[in-house]
Image (tube, rainbow, N blue to C red; front, side):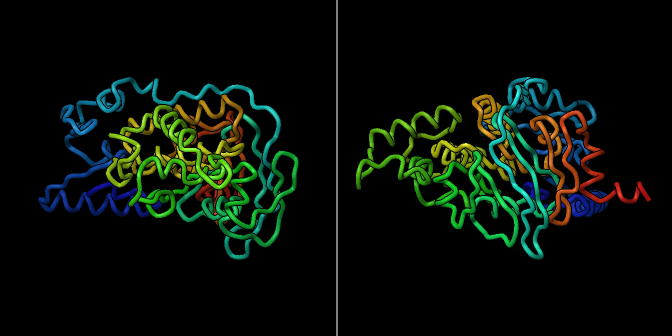
Length: 336
């Protein structure tokens, strides 16, 4: 089973785990591949760690812990894994008021400041990605208003959003983020062609310098910028998608499930980039189903359920229990 829970809701994951346990009891041997350590400790008897294509070691699950596995996977301790600086955010950069789309999301309001990482948490199907697509001009909305850097805007295409300083890393990197048949360099500069133009022509020296700089900044492992992006690992493909949008020099960067299906080493590198972007004054919106990411990277969190923001939590209010209460509707039952 190769990353079988990557797109499943929590109830679906629980049902899958029950199936896995029944298979074990019936005598089936199961190889379970996952980047989610809690799943490894829940299901496995032994854990084998592979890093950069090389065998690192095998441990009895009952005789190891997350700290040891992370050291084996990335070569450093868990305490160095999330490295947000949490500096002071400054002026409000993006404000959304009453954004609605019939049958999809309703009355969505939030703001994000320069230097801030605003999280969007919720169960699969809660409507987070649909809200971001409308914000980015990839789909429409029926009501509401958006202000960017003090200017009221409504993007009718992604090109308009990019021109105004928005960028979005989609959750489906292969279907929406990359042209798999083309090169690493082509993909990195795909959204920034206008910035690289000199009259009707591309400035190839400027293009090559940009590609080299972003490959280095994100630690993309590739034999050359001309290598097909389809040849890269999932983690390196994801870093190419992030590089593509950083090439546009955005004011606001939307990251929709940026570490889905990538290895722990690539996760750590993406987290470091998020911290650097926030420190540089960029506003970052992080949509993630990984609660540990939300808790460790975000300054504040909007919890979405059924297309509505049920609660916006400050950093001091964040906990897994509180987020899940609002995401699953448990706060209503508790109040009753």
